[in-house]
Length: 342
Image 1 (tube, rainbow, N blue to C red):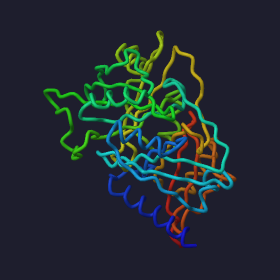
Image 2 (image 1 turned 45 degrees about the horizontal axis):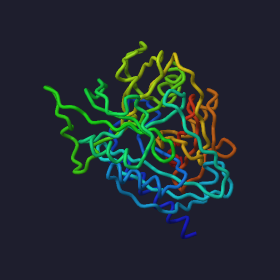
Image 3 (image 1 turned 135 degrees about the vertical axis):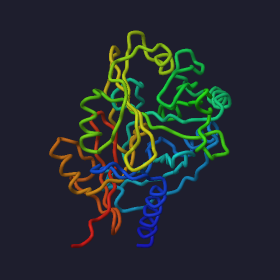
Image 4 (image 1 turned 90 degrees about the horizontal axis):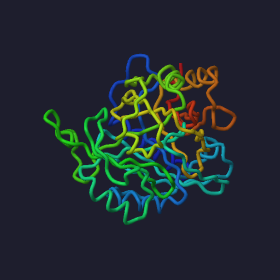
C-alpha cells in the first residue's frame, strides 16, 4: 500500500509541476495542459547517458511502481523505470521509459513515415552537440552530415538530425541572431547549452490529422498547406530526391509547449505505430477536461483506445487516464481529474 501511495504522490507531483508552465487554453478546448513527451527506450540508463553527453541534460532513473501501469498500457505484469528530463525553456519535460517483464518489439522509423516522432532540442551552440554525436558514433540523418542553415517558424536556424541509441530521431537546432531577434530568446533563463524544445510528429495526411488534433483535442496549428521542396529542409531531414513536405506549428493548448507536424509526399512511406512499451515508441501526456466525455467522443469517431478494455484507468483517487492512438500511430496519454461529486 505504501508503494502505491508513493506512486500516487509522484503522479500528483508531476501533475503539479506541469501546471506551473501552463497558460489558459482556448475556450472550449478539450486539451487544458501539457505534461511531458514520452520516449520508450531499450535500456533507459544508456539513453540517459546519451542525452547527458550530447546535450548536458541530467536525470535519475527510478522505478515507477503503480498498480495501474499494466492496465494503462494493457501489459499484464509489466514493470517500469523512468527518467524525467527537464528541458529548459517553456516547461518542457521529456520522459524516458523502460518496460520489462513484457515482450517488446523495437523499431526505428524514417522521418517521413507517418507516426514518426522526433524531438527538436534548441541549443545555444551546435558545435559541441555535433562533436559529441560524432564521438559517440550516433547515426547522422542529415544528407550533408553537417549543420544546415534553414528558415523555420521560429526564425533562421542551423540544425542537424541524428538518432539516439534507440533510433529515436533528434534534431539539434541553433537559432540564429537577426536584426529583429536575438539568437537565444530573452525568455531562455537556462545557463546550460539547451534553451528549449519542440516536439515533432510526421502525419499521414494533414487534413485527417487535424480532424483529430483540432476537432477532438482543440489544437490550433498554423502553416502553409502547400507542399514545399525546399532543398535545405530536405537536406536536413535526409529526405530522398523527389520528396516534398508541408508543415504546421503551434502550442499545446493550455501550455507554452510547442509542437510541429509535417506531412511528406513523393517518397515511399511506411506507417510507424508501436505499443507503449516498445523501444522507439513515442507519445505525449496531456491534461484534458471532462476526460470521460472526451473518450466517448473519441470512440464514436473511431479512435483506437490502447488501455485495457478501452476504459479509463483509476490512476489515483482523483486522477483518471487512458492511452489512445492518433491517426498516424502516436501514443497519447490523456490525463484528467475525477469529476467532483454532485
